[in-house]
Image 1: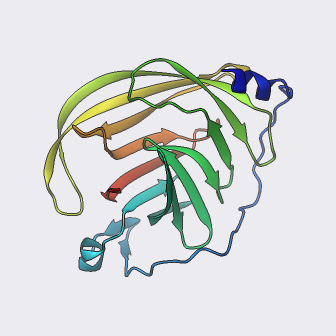
Image 2: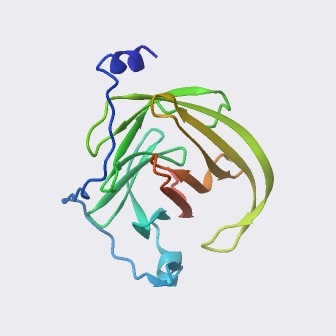
Length: 209
């Protein structure tokens, strides 16, 4: 909390506007033969046989593609597509983006594992805003079963609802996470900016350390 208060001391002026996409270079890419029809990715034999962690990430009106895992640090995982977009996920939630129309970063994110209310800091990058307090709360919506898309294996899930609120810009919403008995997330739906843009993540192959 001291870290949050220190960052907030820098001021609370805020604005958001659409900016151009940031392009990065210098990251090696694994070439996968993908088949995409009518905005739907088909899982080929090459994908099924690949040893790499993969997930499908769809950002509304921007892309719907397979992302590969680049780096892992504690609970943070950096996923990428080609040399253009990098997304950092923590417990299945996008907490940092590079290469989206409206890039953002969330720090001190605790996630749903403890099911306790928490406070983080949110900052937008295009252009840069100050740090804004964002409040999270959680509840279990339901339980059920679903199938993994890579092999059609059935597993039991819990559907977790994450409610958030950013008072200074009067922005609220709800995100959803489908998790298995080991708290691994297999699918999520998230709102990623105040304009209502949505992200959908579907895990093909989860990361195993």
